[in-house]
Image (cartoon, rainbow, N blue to C red; front, side):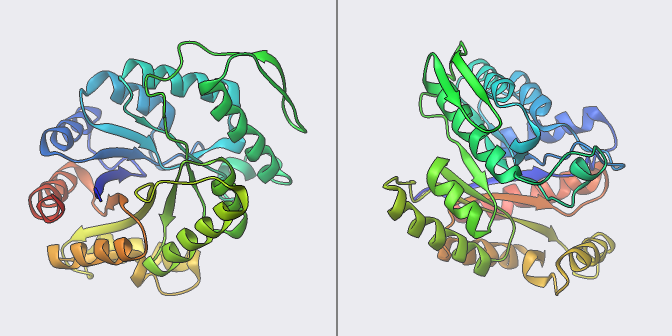
Length: 304
């Protein structure tokens, strides 16, 4: 089974915008499977808007795939989102990897804008159904709690007739959501143990829905760094994770040599994941480029 190893970024770690494109070129030339951008609208740290980034990547690259990890669908209009994704996929000849989730209810995207979080799960379910139908159907009719469509249609459709619909989240509700609407699952910053629980839970929920998800459409994300656990960027990242998780962050990140990173990937494979978004812990262009070089030279060959 093919193992897909992609790289992702959350906050913008580069010194200049031009450096970002140098990194993208290095990823594409080096055989990285895909590039991913976290979705966060409200932030004092520099963070790219994910849909705009997907469109820019479509125009700049020729072969590498790209996705959102993950776009907060409850904050986005499903018609506009379906149209944006279809356009990007059409213009990139089928290279978009759309992935959606709810985002944290405690996140600033909700709290600073007064956006209601009550019933956001139901709103997301309706939006996911509509996005999937708009990609494939004409004259979509829908009478829901949050959305009412009569004869809605978009054109052009995605270039990929089987454009994936990846869904994130590890809660039981998220597992059922993936089983009902998704064609793949992309975990957040989880441990291998958490990923296995999610994969098994989704497979169990699929038995109830009568649907199926390809075995290689389960994905995992984790933070990595070639270096020491004592490096400043690692200790800072670990401290932030610990505050959010309320327990040790050690299993959520890897800092060490290639053997350590490969070992963690293999743990996720054993848990049922075959697609990966690895986020380098790095500050500044020089560090990101060096982490990417080592990833390409020392990690990718292990999974050819």
